[in-house]
Image (cartoon, rainbow, N blue to C red; front, side, top):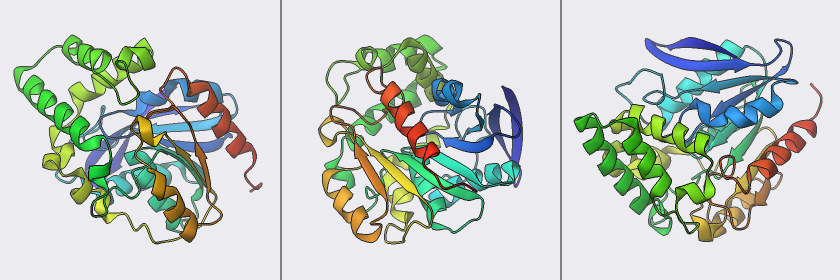
Length: 285
């Protein structure tokens, strides 16, 4: 693995690169409050065959803080990474990263070969949708705790206890569903994240409302849908909405799974297998 820095008009973005230089490239994009090392296990499974790129969005991980945290800004970060890759790549995105990947899949960009979207909040920016999800409560709690702890310069252990012991929409607490490394990764990401990424509590209006949900995907797309009863961002009626405008998009539901299949102990192997099957099924370039 090699850590590198990318420049997006003066904003330094941290990225890591794994795998053979001649491998087919995959760009991984994390969700809000996570960072690029959330993909460590998945990258380990794929790095012998593929050229793996992982990116920290602005305000996350080891990337610079920035004046803007709207959708266009996050998309520009991903475009900076695609320019560095310099050839057609598959984009894998979780949550916010899935929305960015979806927007790029609509763009017709020759460097976007396909997109694999993990439970994207694709429609949560539309009126009334955000309130149907578990995120208003979850984000409110995380935002308030993070602000207090960052001001007090709380140690990493404070964040680790929070993500480990907090109740989850799947039932139980964090440590029941996520392994020690993923919990540590999430804790570290929360400690580092710029609190302004929460958009004063209005992520739906400030970020997600800008998603052009009516546009068609112009490359192969598969969506992994978490269980709406377990805290999913891609809700039950969202499946029909997306299929109407994108009949060729493939949607796979993970029953009993929360918002982060790639991190969940019970689902990370299935997620990896589904991703590998998607990659293997893409048309030859």
